[in-house]
Image 1 (tube, rainbow, N blue to C red):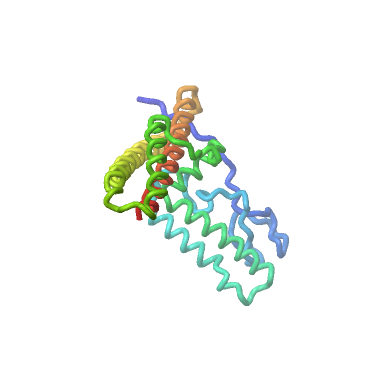
Image 2 (spheres, rainbow, N blue to C red):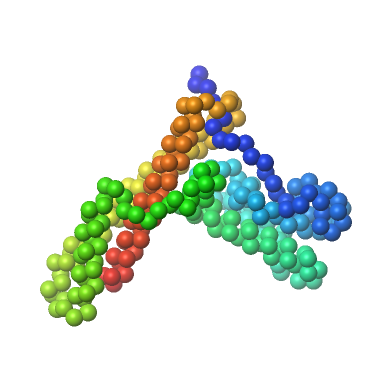
Length: 243
């Protein structure tokens, strides 16, 4: 039977910003409210979004579970429930709600979720670049030239004379959208591969093969997310120019 190594690093799940209650100085053991004085406690700014919403670091997540957890915590932290509380409690509820809302919006969207996980695991979200995919470089340059020609000609030129260029741009758009769909299918494959590695994390120590596989998946995610971002921007520009 194939061994199931641990491929993802263990991490400390720091839920709260303090180890002692800000109000009564009692020990806080990871609960959102002090057991002694029942005051709301601030979430740590270092808390990752997956932990914040009680989810493992997976790329395919249960959206119903995500939403249920979000609404449960929202009821605990919503500022409307703290308008008669102290200034400190109001400030904590605002901070916790802001963190919760950002976490929910990020994890709900699959692309933002992947970019965020990449940042957590590889520190490389900043490397999501906006340069053309290598295999489309020449096509993109030609498309940009056609777009510039259309921009300059559209306000003044006879529309009938622009039809061939419009038809070419429409064809280019279809090809780019098809390429984007292909990228999203490849992203889905990488999502599944990452989650499979995560599922193996309880059985055995890391080995070189699995460490390399993990890095390969993260590199693939970074490349695909970069290329998808660039294509999306080009398609948006193309649609705007032809509108």
